[in-house]
Amino acid sequence: MKLYDVKLLTVTCEFLAQKNVIEILKDHDITGYTTYEVEGNGAKGLRGQGFKNEKNVKIEVVMREEKLSGVVEDISRTLFPDFAIILYVSDVGVVRTEKF
Amino acid sequence: MDILQLIQSNLLTPIVLFFLFGIIAARIKSDLKMPEAISEFLPIYLLAAIGLHGGIEMRKTGFEEMLVPMLVAIGLSLLFTLNHYQILRRLGKFNIFDSYALASTYGAVGAVTFSVGLSFLKNQGVSSEGYLAAILAVLEPVAFILAIFLTNMAVSKQIRTKKQSFADDEELEIGMKQSSTKLSQVLKESITGKAIVILLGSIVIGYIIGKEGFEPISIVFDELFTGAIVIFMIEMGIIAGQRLEDIKKVGIFLTAFSIIIPTFNGIIGVLVSTALGLSLGGAVMFGLLLASASFIAAPAVLRYAIPQANPSLYITSALGITFPYNIIVLLPIMFTISTWVHGEGTIDLFNYVSKVFI
Image 1 (spheres, rainbow over the protein chains, first blue to last red):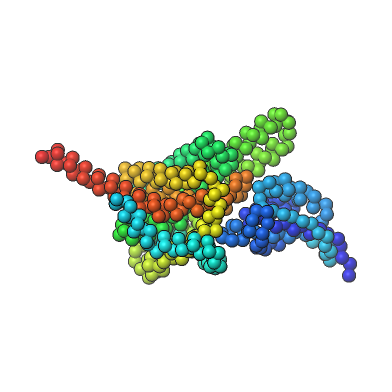
Image 2 (tube, helix red, strand yellow; image 1 turned 120 degrees about the vertical axis):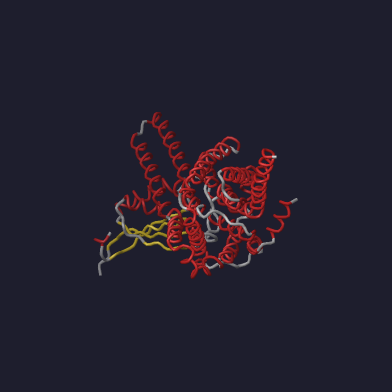
């Protein structure tokens, strides 16, 4: 089986930053992503208590390497100062590279 | 003395007691927690009940009567938002983003506070005008839209001055475009948002079905109403209790602001609405609309539109300070003032009439 190298971008951020992240993805013509609600602790304190809006969300996006730096740059520039957010990038292999 | 007695008896109602109980449960670090589905369901239920009730009442009174109070409420809400901004920015020395976020949080309305007010009046055996539910719906986005608009103006002004020094055209254009899309997005989302949709939908349905149509569902939407608020109050108490430490971070100025401003706005509301001819209960609810701060809708709107503002400031002050103050202390105060001005009005009139005729 042949696997193609692509990048997996994982963003864990406060629930209300989700919309902003997805907008940025859209700006870069990325339509596929997966989100799930998560809880945890971090620099901004324990998150996931109280209102649903105060939960965290984890967004996973698989993309080609060309698009990665633009997306990461936009997220860092617009969201890092104001939101509880972390992101990391990992190498993954996919079978159908034409999907991304 | 009257006010104190009323506050005292209000303190011992199940709504307030369960709220305080929720705070205690959070303080002793109990794992007591409302299931998420219920805490999402209850606001929808409360708004549906408020809307149905309002719609049925509006069928009796018609729409004409509501126009002037609604316009006055919008005007006051905008005026208060500007006023809050000046106070926070000049006296409180908050930055522009926090000032606008807080100003609109206090200019906006709280649906939970509104529900508690309705049940308080029910307890006192007083009714209120049904169209206040429609005013609640209309007022919901008004203050936010103003604040977001003004924040955008201020930001683009800053970008423009920066542009003159750096001459970076592209950045400016992006900034301008972003802020205008944000505003239209917020406008669209608040109008199609669940709170306004369920509220307006229920008003229309209430208007259509009338009193007879309401009969078979009244057990759910009328008799269970106060009970549902009580359950929601446990949740509110827990969330407020978890934030109690944050109150220290809020600071003395904002703490005073979160008590003085609702009192001022609420009393103005009671007086203005009495002058407009609203009933005793209606004036209390009108005052409460202006006194209440938004803590469920506000974070969702503001975090998106003014992300630079610190959310723990506006959530903590609105939920941790203003909400308990409003339902425990201010509601009885406004009720007493409303009773007083309504009672006084008729006595005055009577004296006047008797003076003229005798």
